[in-house]
Amino acid sequence: MRYCGPKGIPLDEFLSWPQTSQDAALEWQAHEQRRCGQCGYHPEEHPTGVHAHVDVCPGCAARAKGEKAATAADDGAAVRLATGSLGTCQRCITEHQANVNHPPPRSRHSPGH
Image 1 (tube, one colour):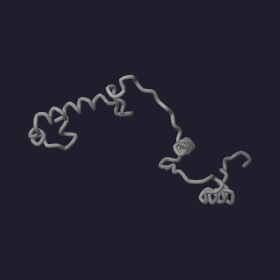
Image 2 (image 1 turned 90 degrees about the horizontal axis):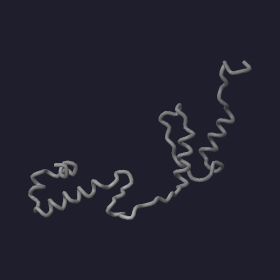
Image 3 (image 1 turned 180 degrees about the horizontal axis):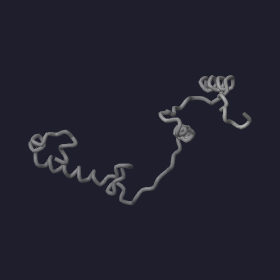
Image 4 (image 1 turned 90 degrees about the vertical axis):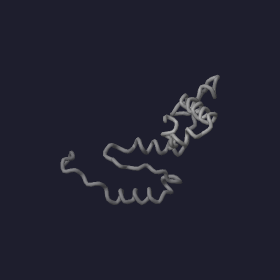
């Protein structure tokens, strides 16, 4: 059942397979259980070991920067990538203009009041 259950194969159907097919399926399962669930590394496929290359995606880097900028007060915030520069993005321009024209209200308890 460890092979059949996760794949949704009824046990009686699996048992109706030729013995060589059953053995092959169970052998493949044993092989795959040795594979790392995170990176896919398998010791039999890379007997001399592996090393890593670091590729930096500009989109992922920009998104990570946006996620770091989001604060705990931004619960539910979604970071989405936008094409072009800040100076050419119509949404950024509009939001900047709205903030310049209507600065946030000052707190009554702010210094100087």
